[in-house]
Length: 78
Image 1: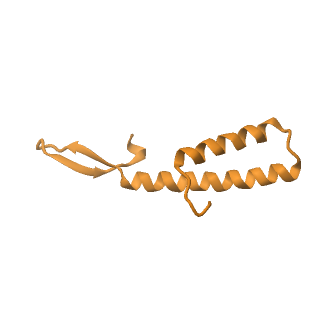
Image 2 (image 1 turned 45 degrees about the vertical axis):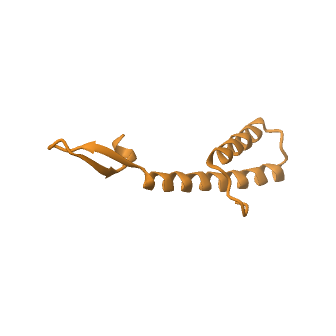
Image 3 (image 1 turned 90 degrees about the vertical axis):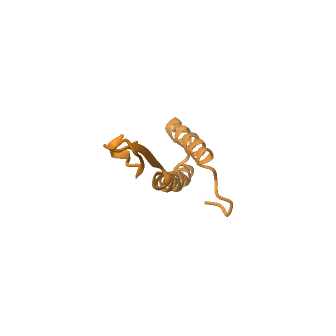
């Protein structure tokens, strides 16, 4: 990524544009490889950002005594 980090939404949009270009099949082999590499970088960046956000999210739930407690967010439980 560049020195100035992209916003997640910008990275996703750029990744979608790359996928569209690759799916059209109009690119040369060298261009395709270049776009593919950029797509992999963006995919890794987005995955890393999602992991970071997931670690920050917590759920407020009510325990058996009616108290509100904070629990870590677990994607597999949703």
